[in-house]
Length: 111
Length: 114
Image (tube, rainbow over all chains, first blue to last red; front, side):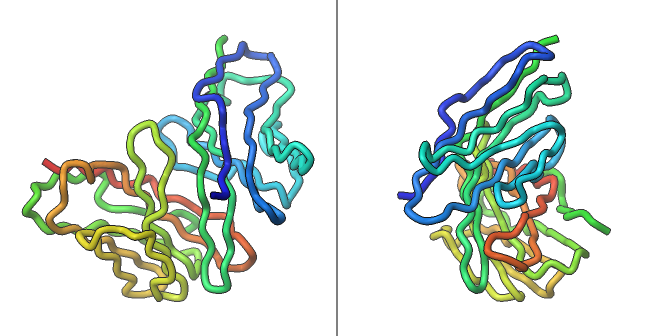
């Protein structure tokens, strides 16, 4: 089955330290990959998608086809980055599209 | 209006009750989705509506019945649920403009089945 894997359930880093949230995918074609974030008491929202290649809130993610990875990185963590992060892949059809989420990584930033 | 709204925020129901969850968006999106999210788990897709027609049903039990009365509104009718159906139910919408759209999520309805 084509899926995304997030190996870490919990990642705890100090404020100001670099952050890397891991995501690996298994997919035979060209994957469409996303990072969604869920802050405490807020709705799930898109953080970034690989196709846009932009940086949001200081986060970047590069698609590495050789390693089949789409890790999320930020050079200096901030306390407000504490949240649940989901790597996800998309499946598009002519009439609809669906998103399949990874199991998620809870990021905790220590002061 | 750039948000997806869901009502009610919380719902407690017995196994013999019939209730409905409501989702609304006024962003002109043509696809709407229902997800189920259990505690400490990722959202799992249940249904997708595109252009007001059901396009994906992820083998959801018939005690969950979706309805899309118009392009802005999505309902989920609940009947004879089980306690294991207790979860956060999320609605989302997207434009249907590309291969895979950005989905915009509502805050969810927290459902408890007694």
